[in-house]
Image (tube, rainbow, N blue to C red; front, side, top):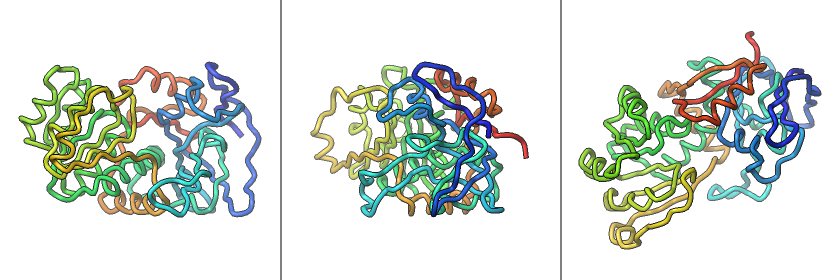
Length: 323
């Protein structure tokens, strides 16, 4: 079969022949039609991820056909019995197990779900990892209720955009931050109330003027700006973090946290039940993940180059042939 293969650190991905996977007991072969990139994939190519093995076929997100069904794949393997946190055997598809940047992949039967009927293959491939992460952040950890005011940072990233779409579908009022005024305007077209450019010195004051205060903040960045979140939270608000692209939180005053009874919560990926609930919610509300660009599998290195440069609005997807 054809696949994108990572043979070593800091080397271009090789497009070529790879062994056809064999389905072990309890597994099924999936003929992939599309796969989507995540920042995780790019970090692995840079050698900045634990437990890297070579050669490896990356890719956590995929959509295709298995046993005559159009399906998407749950990339979170072996979460475990406790829904509060993953087990020690938890894995994400695409490392150490070969992933979705290939014509075929073998996965456990329980990881295969019916593709939402309103999505095409490229849109469906953009859903799994980002949708699961966003769903757990917004609903399980964030406990979002209709009518609440939500701030989602880093609008433009795949998880952030899905968090926006989930919150809007649940009846929330949503604001965003971004380093791009154009991206902020695009989120307005999606239904957001407003947003501010985090490059401006008074961005937190602008947000407070626009919204008054927030009941839920969903953040992927961390960094210095995180310390300002408690000041713009309403009493009883929740701050959920799922990433740290801007590094450590350098200044966080505890006083507004305890006086306002705030909750600061960490999250990553999610359980099988959350994945099933996410797929059902997306189908019910006919949510369509935002796709920035689609590349052919043989041009997959260009897709990785785009992720490395940044600036995309939505998911970068690889089409695994036209069926």
